[in-house]
Amino acid sequence: RSAVTVPRLAEMRARGEKIAMLTAYDASFAAVCDAAGVDSVLIGDSLGNVLQGHTTTLPVTVDDIAYHTASVSRGNKNALVIADLPFGSYGTPADAFNNSVRLMRAGAQMVKLEGGEWVAETIRFLVERAVPVCAHIGLTPQSVHAFGGFKVQGKTDAGAEQLKRDARAIEQAGAQLVVIEAIPATLGTEVTQDLTIPTIGIGAGAGCSGQVLVLHDMLGIFPGKRPRFVKNFLESGGSVHNAIAAYVKAVKDGSFPGPEHTF
Ligand code: KIV
Ligand code: NA
Image 1 (cartoon, rainbow, N blue to C red):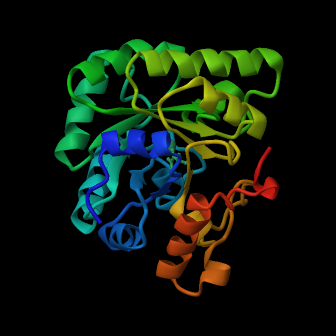
Image 2: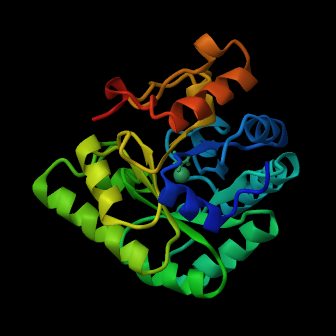
């Protein structure tokens, strides 16, 4: 296959092809994801949980993400490489840009940051300077202490309206992609219909333009509590390659996520 690019994601949404994304943190797993047809690999700050053993993503640094982005880039051929801007690395547009440059020099083709209306100005600043941006709204794990825990978002009318305002603000600011985490499935569908950019859901229902999971969760090797939206694809897959290929197929044919994975 040929390289997955940012414009290609928009084309996939336009023609109704679902986008399959997974996290990856090293060259070997990135190579398997790429070979199994994953469209995009995310060097998520979830590495703070699954690699480093922290209970939140807050301790993760730009150095950590850059190291793993460089590793993933060496193993990957054609998947789009997206790297998370970690907590505290995008408090100002200038900080966001300087840290994005570090991640792009390490091999990222797009950066992801958490937030809605308040990051719109920062998104515009990045996009104008040739940094493609994926926003992340809903349950944004860097806000765990602001939320008072890892809680499903957008459940009240006011919460749902704020989520829609956030989604519109980031699209207007130029973000080319948005991850939506842990919201009611009906709201995931509504936000997707409101936007023209692709939406990538994680616990946001099957109505999104694509899906993402944490690699260690979908392989069933993370010892912590398994969130409702996770499915173990290794149980029936038999091998890591087959598990990831089964995930890609299930995202593409719309069979994942099922109702049992949604809020
Ligand atoms: O860090 C991460 O893995 C993420 C995904 C869960 C979207 O942000
Ligand atoms: Na993240």
